[in-house]
Image (tube, rainbow, N blue to C red; front, side):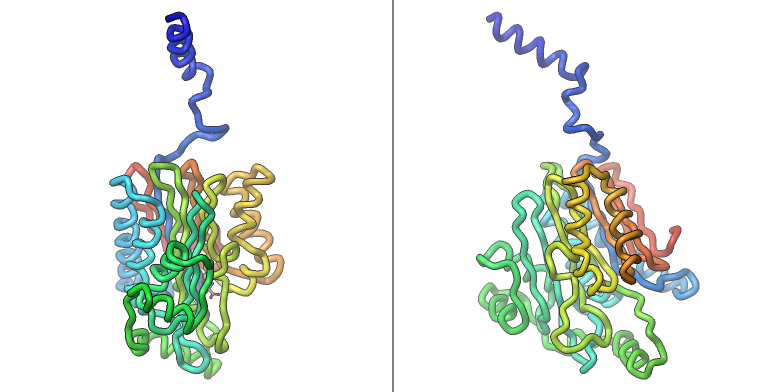
Length: 330
Ligand code: ASP
């Protein structure tokens, strides 16, 4: 009886002692999702009002799908995969349907996904007929004993698991084709970006991240960027944060950008914002790289640093307020 009394007394005193707070930081949001649709020379002047509205609409739709899953108690992996699938199916983005062309006029797609609660991960590189590479990446994570499959092997694995495939011309879009022509005629080095990614925190405190891309316009055959590389373009760890990157992939690989942000939080105790700024705004430009990341930590803090003129991006937390931005300021 006395033991029960003491136990109840301790419980009653916990809120006063502050021991209820999870760690040294306040929980900002019980759950949330943050997404990107690529970084690059995205300025208000470069978009027509219709394009501006189309990007905002597409990003909002991806956020809405992820938000519904999280609000209803679904897990962060599901939210990340579903949000990315929406953007893969939309030709506005350089992922899935709207993938850019390689130098020899083909589409080679990369994707990866990571579960922050187990550190399990899956990735595919250079696939040519998978409708939703992010779903194949998740299959690799959940149904194989490997982390990454490339090219034909990835497709055979997908076929064995009944993944949806499409003819290669599904990925032909006039806009991306013209971009390739312009780059090859040296009329433009311009690439606005359009890789997609998502990072989410669910009600159980689990983090997940994923990224999907067609890579960079005019890339050489077999070139693989950062997006399918765990630690470079994607990383998630429940102890720290979930990150998805976009930008010039070679630099993101060399700096292990996504993992470096997590490591700065884990080993140096930096906040998400500090770690993101240190890596994206300082270390990346120092070696000549450019791009950005979106990230969420276990407390529901969001960071979206980028060095380019703009980055298609947005987030929604447990208050249900959707934030979508394209340019430097809005
Ligand atoms: N990071 C991607 C790659 O290098 C491209 C991008 O995000 O725009 O393949």
